Image (tube, rainbow, N blue to C red):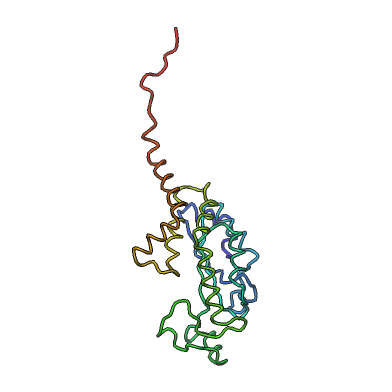
Length: 234
């Protein structure tokens, strides 16, 4: 976040061929960021940084963590409200996870708040391993699900593609493919039936983009040169 305040650096990233930047935003709550020693992130600056990237046709993969001690029910909707006001990117959501031998793990263990002390030996994606303070484990897991559903719904994908309609065609193709693939981080889509259903749900932006690609590819072939140019009259 601090580096991306620099307009020249952002311009150089774009000139070098960069397209996507992964950014661990983690939370829109300054107190949450402070609790995980990441208070150098300034939520008030998120929008300006993401808009600066978009001006240079750069986009962000933004990660958020739910289940921090400052979170309360409704954290997903509050976070989504911010995300909807930013240029479209590829947001990802996860739960606060205490890894062994970290200060967080030791703190939660000392407080008796670990519910799965060896969670890494029994991997369960998007399942809490400790008891948060201001929200239950079940509520935190539901908030994560809500965020994924909202950001990767057909409506959200269509809205993102509408926002990007004036951007280069290659950007739009990459973004749409990224959205369809990132949908699978949370929702199962390992079987061909799941992919068929996903494509069917998003058929409108997919068909629109295919038609644009075809038009761009075929346009040069239809630019016929006049074999009988007009001759000036004597």
